[in-house]
Length: 212
Image (cartoon, rainbow, N blue to C red; front, side, top):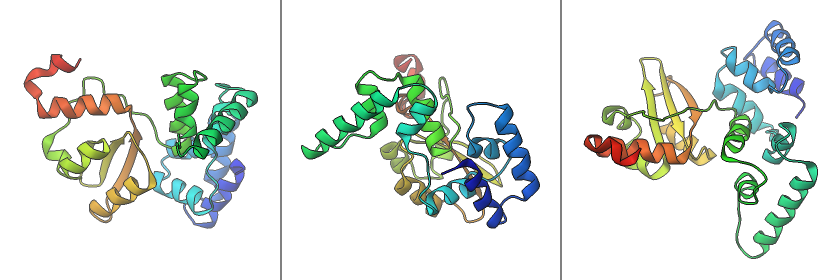
């Protein structure tokens, strides 16, 4: 979807006004490499409203195109990865394109997470040394958090911040149903290894060095 189209949708939904859209587009021209959704998020537009606009109109930018936009891979490498993905699918083995690019050596973990962050319109969270609170984890259910790799970063009277390793639509919807109605939810993307390490630290806080 053209970046201006996302802006028009948000204006039509009364999420932002024309003045905010103008400022966001102006910033986009100055801050090369940033998508409009990322800029609007930085301006304080609710993450949920931006993602809802993208998903309702089925206009979220494909992950492969994001890798190309970021100059992480070439069009040729994207074509090769898509062909490989088709071959694997025929054998009943589906691999997400981003992970396939990683396995093929066309990207590295750092660039992989950078692309995913743009695709899901979620800031990244570094959890090195972070110790989750057992009390906060109960907000989403400790067993659910362990199974789906979710860490509660913060839970104030108005906002709850969650770090996800697998930001699928099912997990996001599950969490929205679980959390109190009216509370603002902010999702962050985090490395699965860091989330797993955090959750192990929480279960065994007296053996922190074991997992570092």
